[in-house]
Structures are given as structure tokens and as C-alpha cells.
Length: 575
Image (cartoon, one colour):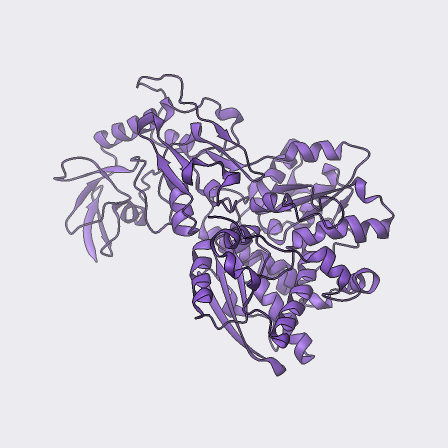
């Protein structure tokens, strides 16, 4: 432990602690625009967090400067205040003046820090801000380098958390910016579109591509039958957009809000999450029994799929051929639902509400049209849905509870936990165990695959199959570690779940801001609570609506119709 004083307060912290961390441990908040708790290393780029250390020749960046025995620190001297204000003024002097119409308005940390350090005017020379091209080449993300403040958070998140190493700083002074490798547009790069760069960006330099206008247009088109699906995680996150505590379940209120927006049917992605478990579980059993490629790896996360296509194309045969629940839903909405309700599939417009920016990219993939049309027409993030509800003047918290529509609205608790890392694995193991042994697990709670540890393992004795070994990884940096094990032959697993985002879908690139591990825990906890509350229906294969789907339409798992509508292939791509 190291003893020091900060603003005349005695502080004792472990050796290696930074001044910023030490100050926050005693309730002193030093502003910063480049540091995040979930990142192990701060880039130390913004210089907003400077403090005065006795006998130091100059002010030091508290986010990278370690504490020392007997150190005396001032975090609020006149010298410090003036330095911080000048740094913010320089940032603002070369920043667009479109705050009121910026997508990050209200969540902009540059605005918040400017308020905290007391900047009321810009006293440094101020000219027209440096204009950079806007990269809106992809379906998922938009980059506006004019709004970049060179904090390097996105660079750190892309490298340290996601292991993609796509983004890099380029240039100096007012000409500096962050660009994808080789200065390519995002759509031509190895970007996975996970959106974690947008989650950590303090300004509007990287945001999700807004598709709300497309949905408004569809809702107002009398020739379209507009249906909506919502991912499992949305019900535990949407409330945050309206000031409710993280982890508040708003399922019924969300359904009512969607109806008031004008959707013709409100369905649930959980329905096809249950379906995914049936198809994926049977695919795993088929591979085990026939000597197929093992370990089998889940395919629900489109960011992860894009990652393996670029960085581990030789391992693509390990990936399940199942589409994600989002894409299964789109294919069935324009076939099964259209046939059942007697609706022309050409008039059906499918909207997805997803926690993930990569889902926008996934819906636009050319192979996702097995219904004969584009299976999912538009994908909105949780943030975009929040904007639509506010535009319509709807008070979410005051709404009555609604119920999902049939036939694609019933779901099990196993489907709900898809939204948390380990949830797909837990749901699959519940069903595989029941199919093989003819009885349920003694306990349906497989806690070994829960939580925010980067890589988790579990082993389960399943009847004639013997011991089935499973692994779970979330965040593409952890996925890289597991893939290296598979490539080297060190992974003796049967089944691997990988989610691109930290925490799984509860930490998706389209979720309410700001993000933190504590919020991810609370959101996941809400999904597990929702699962445990449905005591009568906690396993995917027990869902009556899924059973009816097979009886009336699909006939059997892995059958001809299932193969055509619910399974796909993936593509090796260049790095």
C-alpha cells in the first residue's frame, strides 16, 4: 500500500494505482475524456485529467501517472483549472457547432466535461473547424472525423477489448484523426461492426446509422403490413432511455409502446431464439454422433461471424450453420406467418429492435433472403427505438402492460437469457440434456457459464454422450484467445459460445449510454430473473408455439424446409 495526500486528504491505495484512481477512491472526481474503467490501459491522450504534483516540473496526466509514497497532489488548484479549461477550449475551437442536432446530444461527454471545468467562452483563436469526409459506407456505423477529439478510446477498445486492431491515429495537430487500417472505408475493411467504438466514443465521431425514417415511412404506408421483433436484451435496457434504473424489465410497456407507434403485429425474437436452440442443439448432436467438425461454435452474433470470416477463415467449418434468431424470424415472417395469415409476403415489412449495430450489417448480407425477399427489412438499435418513442410523445413508464401477438410471440425462459453472455450455451445444454436423456437437468441453472469472466468453461454428463465440455467467450479479444486454442488443437470442447460484445447482448453496440460493467451485470440479472419467474416454461423444446411450428410447417429439425429457411453459409474474407 502507498500513502499519499490528495487535496490535503490522507489516501492509502495499492502500489501501481494511478492518481486518477486514487482520487476517485476518496470521492474526488477528476474529469477525463480518454479513460474508461473497463480498459486496462488509458491512452493518456486527452490531457483533461492533469493535476499538480509537488516538486513535479509540469502538470501530469493523472490517468497514467502512478502514485508514490509521500506524494502530495492538488486536483483543483488555479493552475490545474486553467490548464483543463484551455485543453477543452482548444478541442471546442476545432469542433463542429451542431450540438443541438448531433446524435450524441445529451450523451456527449465533451459537453459534460466543458460544463464541469467551467468553460463558458472560447478564448483561444477559433477558425472554421477542420472538415473531414463522413464515412457512411456501411449499414451499421457512421464515422465523422470532424467530431473526433483524438481521445483514442475507440483505438483502445478496438485493440484491447475486441482484438481487431482496425483503428489507428493519423496526422498531427488539427489534421490528426482516427482512421481504419490503410485509410479504407469501414465497408471495405475488416471492421466487425460490433459498435464498441461507438459505445466508448465521447462525442458523435462514431455513431450507429439511423434508420428511424425508414421505419416511420413503412408505418405510414398503407400497403405495408409492418411487424416488429425485439431481441431478448431490449426488455432489460429500453427503460434506461427513459430514466429507469439499469436492469428494469419493461417487456409489457415496450409492447404497448410499439403498438402505439403503429406496428401491425408485435412479435418477439425470443420465439426464434427457442427455435435456434432446437436447430442448433440437433446440429450439435448430429456432429457428435456422425464425427462432424468439433467443437461446434455458435453463430448468433454477427460481429463474431464477421470476425471469424476475416481472421480465422480456416475455422469456419466449426461454426454452426444456423442463422441468428433475428434472421430466422425474418425468414419465417415472410413464409410461415404470411401463409398462416393469408398475407402477401411482398407486403410484409419486418423491423428488428436489436442491442447490436452489427445486426444492421447482418440483415443486409446477400445470403439473408431465403424467404424470396430480404428477410429483415430494417434494424433499429435500442437507442433508435428510444428516439422514436420520444418523438411520438409516449411516456414509457406510464404505459399499461401489453402482450405479444401469436403465433410468433410465445417464448421460454431459456430464450430470454440469450441476451447475456453464456445464455445461449445454458439454453442449449438444457435442451440437449433433455433430448438425449429423456429427462430434465436436476437444476436448470448452469451457473458456471454465467458472469462477466472473459472465458468460462463447463462440463456436463449427458447420458450416452458422456461428458460434454463447453466454453463461453464474450468480447472479440477473448474470442481470439479461444480460436487460437482451437487452431492449435488445444481446445477439447464440444461446443463453444462466442458473443462479440462484452457481456453479450446486454453490452451491445446499440445499447443505452453510457456503458459500464455494473450496468451489464444489472441487465443480465434482469434476464435471469425473467427466466426464473417463468417456472412452467424454461426450456426451448417445451415452447408450444415452437412445437406447432414444426407440426404445421417445418416438420422436423434439420429437415429440408428448415435447411432452406433457417441455415446459411459464411464467407472467408481478407484481413
